Each structure stands twice: as structure tokens, then as C-alpha cells.
Length: 502
Image 1: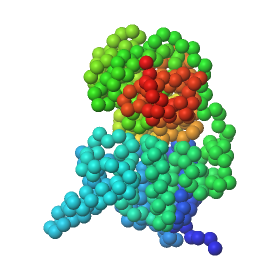
Image 2 (image 1 turned 135 degrees about the vertical axis):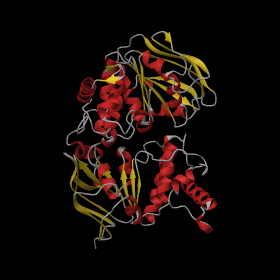
Image 3 (image 1 turned 60 degrees about the horizontal axis):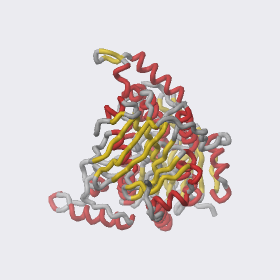
Image 4 (image 1 turned 180 degrees about the vertical axis):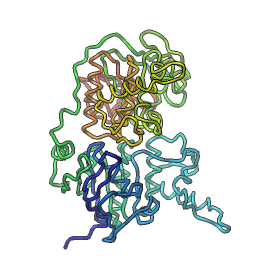
């Protein structure tokens, strides 16, 4: 006997102006099942999620819960119906505590409707124990790492005891152990009868966690398959509509002069005595576990954070400490890990975001010439194969992969000699990932020096000419491409190699 779905989507369609985001999409979620939603960025996954969450209202089609029609007037309606969503990008209130973020708008009350802060604290502590994460409920959200922000979002979703849990790239910023812990929580929820919709660009996670997978392409339903009868290659073909080219199209590097030289860079309590060079034409990967200090090093190199000791030289010239302007003037560009908070101004248009790093060349007297701004944006949109409606559209409406392309365009438009990219493919699909890899490889072939921070070990091994491995704030190893393996990198990252780089 066929079980009735907890949630069913029938013929769902949604447009934004002339852009058709969803066309006649069908999906079924069953109790006790983990169901994957796959597709490239721009395939319609985020629009479908936001429709189920009550953020968007569909133009056509229906959503049914336990066989009954569901018409959500807003996110609160979806939440009250038992649908909880963990979005790809954290959306916390930075000046509130972790506990306040989790229970915002539904805090337990004492007499006279005063908030029961002890109950809020205790409930949050219980959620953190359930997740196995030692986060203080009273800690402010400001300053939390991406990984910790994601944990707070997960705890917030779990606090609703939802029947339908939608997880949008929940592991994108998590370590292997954190991911394993999350999967254990998902298995517990499944055993309790929850239906889980899981979105991940890491195909191995889909095959590890889910029993079914629905694929979208260009806003349309392509197929729903049993994972057990599917291969990764077959799933990729469904997602992109073609056989995927080589994911790591690394070109042979012709190394030039040293473009970036870092000497004995130290920030007390974070990293110490870090020294390395990056040559023109070279891609150097900075690898290691989350918390090893990789992002903090590149932020100090660019001048976002002040180092306590050490020097940074670009083209033989010493950079002024703690000055991003000096770094930019010297030809250094930084694509940050958190594209929404640090890479983009979400309220501004695509063209304005691309032009932010070159305002001085786009006008005079404090006035921007729109034709120059639009021409610059159009040129880079074409070169990076950006998918968009109009350049005047808010960058917020773009998919995650296309937002990343806008950040890259913004910095590549400065014509840098050193490009620092922190997690360049976090949260983007396999097709766009291959495009970003191809771009980085071609830029290096043209003489750009690339310093790449990545938690994706296959990406590190596939793209880097050298791998610098950090462990607990120090460089633990320097491994040439020919000798870099998963085992050698992880041995150094976990501190088991017993020596540090010279």
C-alpha cells in the first residue's frame, strides 16, 4: 500500500517579472524519509524552498499537507503548519545572543508577560547538547564563525519540532565531524517520523543521507529517482543536461616572479610565524581544518585585520599594515568567505556591486557615469557567464553561484596581480564550480598569482600547484602538487606529521 505524502507539490509555477523561476514542478515528501533536491544554481531550488516556507506565493499549482490544501500567507503560516527551513546563508541578529536568536518572537513568559530568560537559556542549552556543540547560549551572534552561525540556524529549526525540515546547504561551512553529527541528528528526526528535504551541492552527501532525489533544471522538474539505483554521473547529467567537463581543469603553470611574500606574520592567539610566497602563474592553496587560522591569515594579508608582527610584500614593496586600501593599490584583491556579509551589498544592483571597487574610474566629481558603470558590469557579466534578468536588478535575487560570480567580477575588474579567494566554491553547484575552477586556472595561466583558501579537499588537490597546510595557527606543511594526497594533507592538518614547514 502506497503511503500518502506528508507534503505534496503539484504543478507549482512562479515568475519574477519576465524570469520564470519555476514551471510545473512536482515533489512529494514522506514521513521518515530524507529526500534530496538537486540542481545547478538557478535551477529553481531556492524559489521552491521559499514558496514552501511562505516567503513567495505561487502563481499556479498547489501545496498540500497531509492531503489538505495549504495556502501560506507568510513564513509564520508555514512555521505554524510544521515546516521549518534552514537557509543556506545564516540570517541572525548580530547584537542578540544565541538564545535570543533561536527563540525570537516566541520566548517563554512569566507572570505579567515578562520573558522567562532562564527557560530560554535552558532550552537553548538543551538544543546545543542535542547537537553536541559547546556554544554558550548567552554569547552574542556577532563574531560567530560561519560554521557556528549555521549551528544556531539548525538549532532554531529543531526548536520548532517540525514535521517537515528543509535543509538548504546546511553542511557548506561544517567540518567532517560536524557534518557527521548533523547527519546523526537528521537520522534521529527521520526515526521520529519527520520528512526531510535536503539540498546539497556535495553529491556524496546526497548518496550518503537520502533515499530519493528530485532534480530541477531551469526551473522545471526533470526526474525523481531512488538514490540506490543512481550514480553520481547520472545525477550530474540530469542536473546540467550534458556530460560535465572535467571539474578541475588545471592548466600547466608557468611560474614567474614572486608576487606575494608573507614573512613571520603573527596575530596573537590566532596564528603565528606564518611565512610563504606566491608566484605569478601559481595557485597556492591554504588548507586545514576549520579554526586552523586560514581565513584569519588572508584577512591580515589584505589588511582587514591588524597583525601583531610580520610583513607582507607585493611585488617587492612592503604593504602598510591594516590597510585594505594599500593592498588594493598594490594590486591585491580579496574574495571573502561570506559573500553576503562581506562580499556584496545585497540591497544594491548587480551593476553597482560590480562597480564598487572602481568608483574613481567610473565618473568624476563624486558623480558616477551610469553608461561606464553599466558597460563595465555588462562586460564582466558576459565574461563570467552570469545568469541574470537585468543588470539593474538587486543582487539579492541571484542564485548563490551567480552572486559569487558578481563578487569575482567586482575584484577582477580591478585587474589585480594577486587574487585571494576564500572558499571560492562554497555553496555553489557542480556546473558553476567547474566554471570557477576554469576561470582561476586561466587567470593563473595569464600570470595572476592566486592564493586559495578551501575546505574542499578534492578542490585543493585538483587546483593547487602547492598546498600550505595549517594546524592550530601555524603552517604545518608545504606540499608540492606531485606529492599532495588526501592522506598527506589530512596528516598535516590534524597535527600528526610531527613537523612544521620551514
